[in-house]
Image (cartoon, rainbow, N blue to C red; front, side):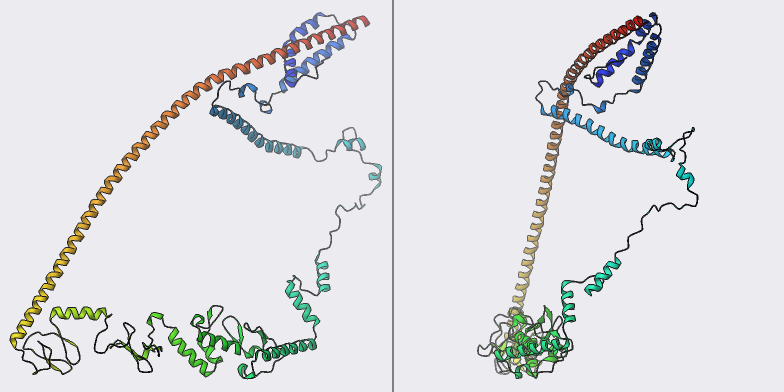
Length: 562
């Protein structure tokens, strides 16, 4: 008989069992020395069976260390104050626990798959214990058929295993659709309201509704003072036909009597007011509907002749950029000058009242003079003065003397003296004056060429100096970049070496700390295990002594009975 203390742990039971297995040979020897009689043989036989059962349980029992918490000695750090050491120990233990969890998760699906495989390997006709109790079995272990089963013939119909399917929901949907008189796939609230209103309204109600709308429209027109001349003749409405809404006045009209813009419909009076407003204010130009320009042919077909002419005038003026528009220079006129009244050859423009305006300065025409703001003409006059050109006293065209006397004939037929510019044979200039004039012109031309050459040389020298300076700056910047790159590389190398040295020093310190800590933890764990083993040994000895006493008492009892 084996008695184990219920208060002991699993480890204590294992230790006690091991202790019993170690002392198994001694017990067998003591049992062999005893002369058993009568029922004592049965007691010795039970003892042998108990010892074999303990041995088999020891062989089958395996301790899974992953199911237990780590020893307390592994978390002991002693008098170490380093947070890094504490973090390394904690993270190491957490990593081990995480690996155990991962292995457990990987093992569970395999166990489930093995169990399912075992279940599939079992025969299908194996019944549960409850069925075994209620069903009679034959000698071979197979269930016998009941009297009712024997009485029932093979042609008996079994009860149906499946219930009849529920009818689909289409019939119910069709019922509600017919009841509500709505479409099969549903509709919006606005569509439902419109449908019900259409179904409930009779033709008489529709006519009365249109009459009420016409009456309200007439009242509004009379209140605002708009007569039929402004809106044009009223057209008869067709109560039963479709109507569209004017986006401006929000009234309903027959589509035949509205103007279709790119986006919406307008009644004719509202459309004409839109065009007139655009012609009166440039900010509203051109006429638009939802930021889309209304085509010219739509406007031409729906406005009167005066409005169309005004629209064309505004289109010619406002379709041109503001910088290209020419207005009359007279303050009391200030009319826009159309492009066909611009004279480009004279750089002037004439308005319909006969006022001339300079195209360059936008002021009045300069009589017989060039515009002071005409930069091109000013530079041309300077070039003519330096080259010795003369103007024709009739057409003001420039003329250059190539050879011959001072008598010049312009292409316009005018004859004049090249030296003084007076009409021919009205001056006393000679060839000597012509040669002096040409020498002076030549000297001015030479000076101009020399000045241009000096300026060109100065510009080239300046460009050379700029290129030289840029090259020096680039070289200086390159040297500076190379120096900064070299210094940065040296700094990085020094920082790297310093980090390596610090890392090596830190690892050496951690190695020494962990070596000492390992010895300390190993000693603590060993001491804890020794104490635990000693306690288990004491408990095992006590249990063994109790068992021997009980066995001895049983032997004495058996002897007394014998």
